[in-house]
Length: 176
Image 1: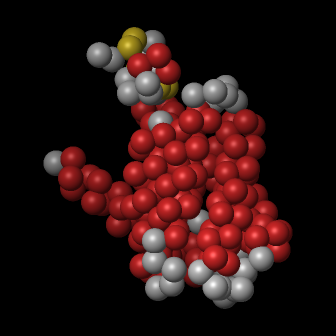
Image 2: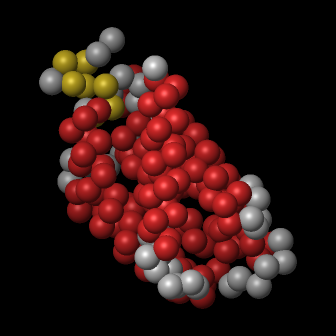
Image 3: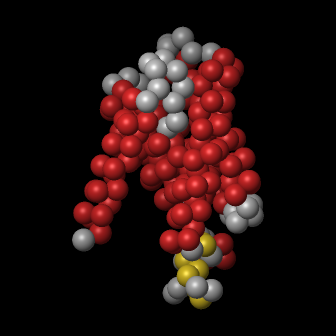
């Protein structure tokens, strides 16, 4: 039964990302539902889950766009893992901090992606990509991630940092 739930969530994420992209003109920055989900998964469930979510959703974005296959998966995996590592060190109950972390990680993602594209010969300049793509996408994500994070936090609870981020606190009790 868990397989079907994850499959439905994956199909919904792909559909939402394509729907969000269709609302913005071609060539303009649009919110990345995949990046929002990757950052949120990292913040809620830790670095491994954030990295795994980034690989799956980043590779999906690469396959949908049809270019630089694997670069989006790599950069999204790095961002998901960093979100999980940051979650262990910051006060995640404060949504302002969650918004700032998502803005920072979205900017880092755009610089890493454009730098990787530049290494493969695509004429991206990381500084210009940050201003043209990273900053607007980061602003979109800094609005969307706290909303999704707050909903997920209510549903899943808080990670136990002493257990390596593996156990959940639900109703004040540590699940074991």
